[in-house]
Length: 188
Image (cartoon, rainbow, N blue to C red; front, side):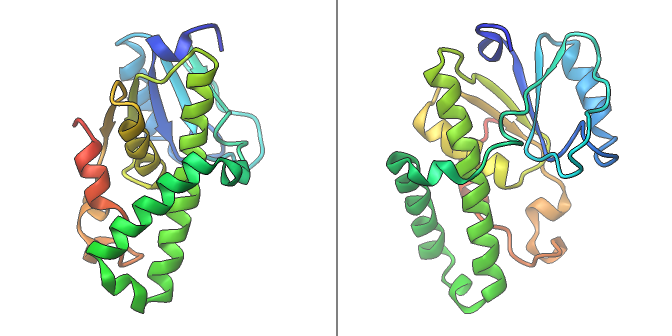
């Protein structure tokens, strides 16, 4: 990444695009966003471990989140923010306690959100802070970005939501963690 490229760019947060064969439909969004100005594609994962698909000219790939491990667990400020979010979720949704599946999903969201918070913190520390983010999915990474907006209100977050991101009965997991947090933090 060039100096200050995140500050001027739109960050497109995806699950694993441009790796593997999944999320091919994200390419349309990448092309559209690239016409609006500098674009950085930030995949959460590179599950296939292979090379990325070609990106349009001028689009930058940032693999910093995909390669991030659990090191954020040693950052007390980030850990406290995650624990606080978990407390808010459990207070408003106490039925989670009665379901191992829901607790497992909550823990997964917290872990993945922590990775995003650490990535945003590192970008800020290097003098190249995140300013504009479009989360292609309203998932754990979008929730992490929502938490980042609590720490840094200058971040603008837009999150796409699909039917299974809004209605729990449409979601295969039957529980959607942190919907209120995400809805309150997203600007659109």
